[in-house]
Image 1 (cartoon, rainbow, N blue to C red):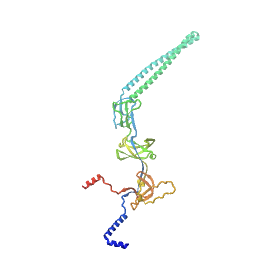
Image 2: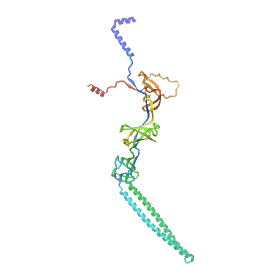
Image 3: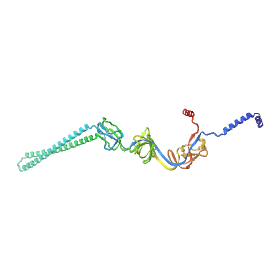
Image 4: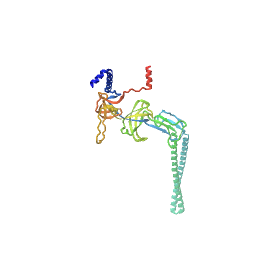
Length: 425
């Protein structure tokens, strides 16, 4: 057979050459390694800081916001402040029409004067009743002495006794009228004090120093304080110290304690990082659409005045921190190479069910062959969002795989085509 093939090749040299080339091409395609359309991205294991954080959102509030109201009804006649006006304690903010209240004060003063005049009259009646009682007591004593000697009849003694009793009753009535007069004076004085207090309340003053952050009245506004105290102004007592009220999810609230460090940003200053501390964790739950959260109060200095009440704060509460420890990117613990590159034997399924064990943390290190990573089991410590502490299993300088990068060319869009055309021209 070999001789037959050899003879055929000699007779058909051209076709033999073509067939040989085809066979060599097929063999090359079979033997040639398949190029990869991806590559692994690695990062170096370093030493540094590991932070564990809890993210939340909240609102910036003034540390002490005072609502200034009025207990007097009437029309606002004057307003002396506006939004953002700095005020001092005792400063006049507004005035309410005092005509009706002033009339009530005058009426109360007249009632007190009338009650005092009536008291003087009752005092005079008491003096007259005492004098009359003394006269009747002496007359009764004489009548009784004469009756004992037989010079006055029993009827005459009874008349003297009756006059004495009438004088005593008259004195008691006069004394009672005196007490009534004193009570009327006390009542009138109390009404006068109330009227004067209302008169003073027609002038609205600042209870503390601060800045006006809200003004709810203008001259001509009528306020009614019948059932509740209407608010006229809101004062931020001290804007150099603010607080952030952050809403923390119930799953994370167990990690929050007082005194923890906090960093946050606000939309107005996205490049500025503000630092603060947790002051209080409120235990009252807040439920919104079946989601339970808790309010965390955070103190922050605002000496530069950048923070304004009502700003939205993006908060990160640092619940754990370690410095100068061996660390790897946290996403490296979740990364797994493609199954074809792992080179790991398949685990045999056990015949009897066993207790499910918690998988150990695993990393993949870059080896000499870029597509044959080395699997390493490690022990971890503090785990943060960005980095995780590694206590054993690897060393500084090792390269761990963190993600896969595609090498496929990106399809050109119309915009890119236009750019290429313009660059070529």
